[in-house]
Image (cartoon, rainbow, N blue to C red; front, side, top):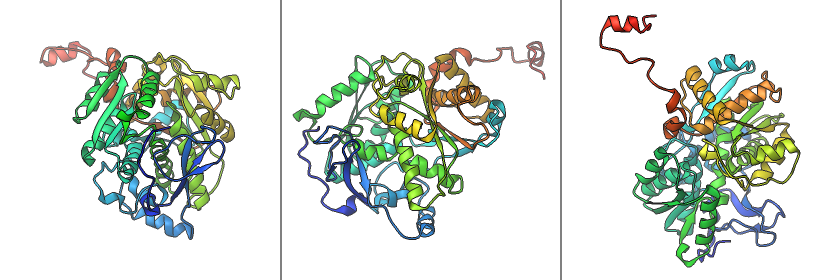
Length: 428
């Protein structure tokens, strides 16, 4: 656990409806503070709430009258009521695209939607989680924002810190895609490449946070992880609101650490509890690349333990060989009647191009994983195409150009004349 001297929150209002940190394993509760592991059993901590009561319709109208970003859901998040007035990137409320062309291609008859989070400020869903972690860092008086990252998070932390006036220092594997390296560096913070995999980077950050050097640092996915994770719930809120306050039948979610999937499930359960959506069965499906598929491997084998793997895939944003929330992903997939599946790198590239060709959405490799897994789930009979399905695209394809560049070239190069155009067979 972090060797921090920062005090816990002094007032309840600083964290809205959040009431405590609760251990996901033993249930022990702790004050709201920059903590991430239970002092009793070392299990992971998450935010517990006293959620607003009363008439669901009143709460629904309050949400709908809010800003067109994640702060419309402030009554359900660990943030102060005036959060929207503070300097931040205001991510969220991205498009839910009705993907009829892709649905026809894949044989989905119940309705297919792409939740396209490439529209966030740094073009990935990581802006959501960082926004919540940033507010916790403000309250705790931290001065430096940091993280271990496979790329997207590094950029989101750098941008959010720049906007809010924080120092940033982020850590990445040394061999990330060039686009993600540039995007993380451009915001002026410190960017440090670590020789090794993401898991090596994460271990280093865990050491740093326990050292005096890390005093006053907020590692968004370590000592601020309980708050950070809550940002992913907003995907669940938005999907249901954009569907007309309705639960979908199926949701396909990429797995890196697994936190996003578990928090989307938490968000759906909260909406049901609050009466904002009608309760009904839904299925959650996890998606991994074959070259880093520890959760998929465990699911298919019927195991409860996720054995680490050494990543080897083009889907580097998902290349976490030892996913912290892996066991919880297994529980959710099994509880909801879903599954965890994986696809090859070749299938990832094919799916990126399929989504681009059918819906005009250029996804990064993680989006290729979810679309590729959706196709595989339908082909293998694991997902009912008659159900209403939502697939997540968590980032912009411009960040992972190397994946599709070799097969995405000019159709022809010709002289500037009509004769040359006709000779190339392009006249229609």
